[in-house]
Length: 151
Image 1 (spheres, rainbow, N blue to C red):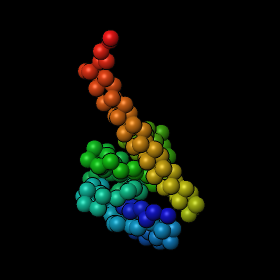
Image 2 (cartoon, rainbow, N blue to C red; image 1 turned 180 degrees about the vertical axis):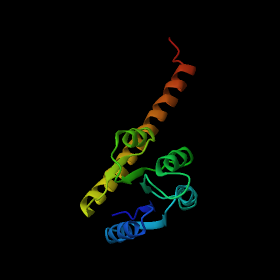
Image 3 (spheres, one colour; image 1 turned 180 degrees about the horizontal axis):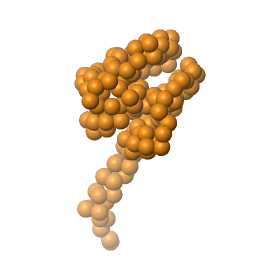
């Protein structure tokens, strides 16, 4: 298995350390653990993780949803929300943020692992589709600017 780099943004220290233990045991590399949105943005820019696990409720002025929007504007990285919040407003805001997945607390090791793997896979496929779409668009533009001559 490729050793993916993961950033954990979680305000509860015990939970973040437990997640770290589980993920390292599964072969992931934890690049950083933060407890607030500002640090999540800073560490994401600095560490360039392959995936971010982000609690919606974080310490500080910026919550996980706001931090994820900023991170997604600056970096192309999948984000998985971790939360115990299940009200409709929170779910709607999470959907609108552009993140890949949403995992409800409490979760087990299997759910965490499978959610991460699916988010990484979905992100990879989306990037391949985006690249192919861009290539086709370039080809289309090239053909339109240089039409074949009729004989």
